[in-house]
Structure formats: structure tokens, C-alpha cells
Amino acid sequence: MINVLFAARPERWTTYEQPLRDALAKAGVEANLAVDLPPEEVDYIVYAPNSDLQDFTPYTRAKAVLNLWAGVENITGNKTLSIPLARMVDPGLTKGMVEWVTGHVMRYHLGIDTDILRSDAQWQPRTPPLAQERSVVILGLGALGAAVAHTLIGLGFEVSGWSRSAKSIEGVTCYSGDAGLTQALSRAEIAVLLLPDTPATENTLNADTLAAMPRGAFIINPGRGPLIDDDALLTALNTGQIAHATLDVFRIEPLPQDHPYWAHPQVTVTPHIAAETRASTASEAIVENIRRGEAGEPYLNLVDRSLGY
Image 1 (cartoon, rainbow, N blue to C red):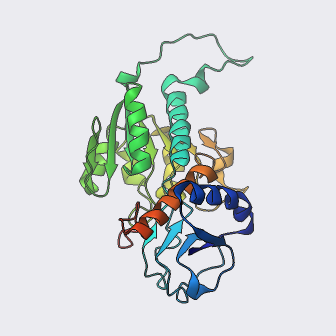
Image 2: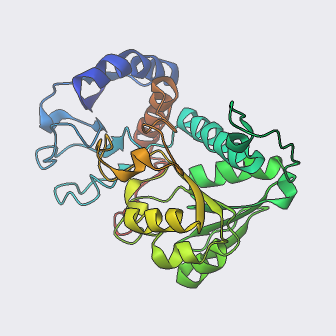
Image 3: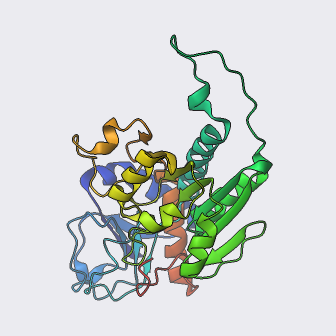
């Protein structure tokens, strides 16, 4: 019998308790799952970075910390954490992200906002381009970026991608490094941001990189708020360099009521809804790593803390 500590906000326990118990039973893992266990008896920690647990020093027997969130920027710098840390790669979250991004790419590609006629609008029929005539660039080619890329390729889009380190994805023109970022953005009629939040990715879209994009390009950010220099984006929107931006994540959430994004006619604000971890599928992912740990197999989705993701 192993001991599994659930360390997250109380409302998360209400959501996750039964799915985790079901997943443990399905995997044949005998475990004592609880929210309150003696630290020295804990084998695995199911964790949310906003929980009260911030000092991992007492957990001398723990084998791994299994993050409930896809984002790990709030835990990678914790100097008391020396055991393996796995980030959440949830099939349900991935599917949700793919659907959300695809919907907004199609919205921009087809010009749906423009075609919605109101009483003062003129009847001006037009023919949108085919997907094969539209270039989409994905910044961030991890699990989410790759899944989005495959779906957009299936719809016929010309898809390119950029990541800090070199990646290879079938059907995707892949760029990397500083020079590669400019090359990728130079063809980005629609740019989708799915990078992690690290010191190296902050302000990836800034005055210089926004200027490298085709005039009238569109931006979709369901990744992380700090990826964009807000002042630079507002300037690019005001000059027409960027036609429109759909933003789901922000440096401060909820987005302050006095933020310029709210009133800007070329910005769509959504309340961090692009993708959410699903308790059932996330629980299966967590239990699979517990099973692997007990079987002596490699953990899935381990975080490289030197890179921050």
C-alpha cells in the first residue's frame, strides 16, 4: 500500500477525489489517497502550485510530485523540491485546446466577424481564401502545439512552428532560435502562442517581432500572458500592423477592469477558458505515472527545471 497526498485547494479535492480513486482502481494500484498524511509517510504528491504546500523538505520518502496543471512556472524555482516533477499532459485538456484554437483560427481565416451584418452594414459578399492559401504559425511545439498543428494541417492550412530548441514535426516547417523566430513570424498571417512562461519566453511578441509579421496579421494567445508585451501589441493594433488579437491569458487575472484591452475594438478578451484540465482524464494521467514509479519505469512528462518546463 502506497500513500498519495492530494495537495491542492479544497474545491479541487471535491472534484478529483472520486476520479482519482476510480483511476487507481482501474490501474490496480493499491493506495491510501488523502489530503492529510504525515509528510514522512508520503510516497507521491498530487500537486497544484497554489496549494498551501510550499516546503517539500519534510517529504523524505516521496518519489515524485505530479502536477495538476500544465503550467509549472510557479513550482520549478522551488529550491526545496529535489525529486522528479511531472507536468500535466491531459488528453482532455489537449482536445479542448485544439478545439478552441481551431475555432478562432477558422474565425479569422473566414472573416466571420466581418461577415456578421448589422443594421448599418452594407451587403458586400466576398469569397474567403481556402485554408491552403493561409499561413498559420504556432509558437511553441510541445504536446499542445503539435496537436494543434496536426489538426490545422488536416484542414489544409500551411502550418509552420517555432520553438526555442529544434523540433521536427511531420508536415510542419519548424524553426528554432532567435533567427528562426523572425523567419517564422515573417510568414505568420495567423500566429498562435502556446509557449511556456519562462524568463526566456517573456515578451516573445514585442515591438520588433510584431513588426516582423505580415501587416494585418492576427494573434491568438491561449498560452501565457507574459508572452506578449502588452504596450507593443496595443501600438501594433493602433497602427494596423496587427489586425486583431484574441487573448485568453493575461499577466494579471482576472484582467483589471481599467485595462485597455477591454475597450479596444480590435481585441477579443476571453476569461482563461481555452483549455481546462478534465478530472477524469487528468486522474488517469496522474495514476499512470504512479504506476510507472512503482514499476520502476520512466515517468512521463518530466520537467527540465533548468529550462523551466
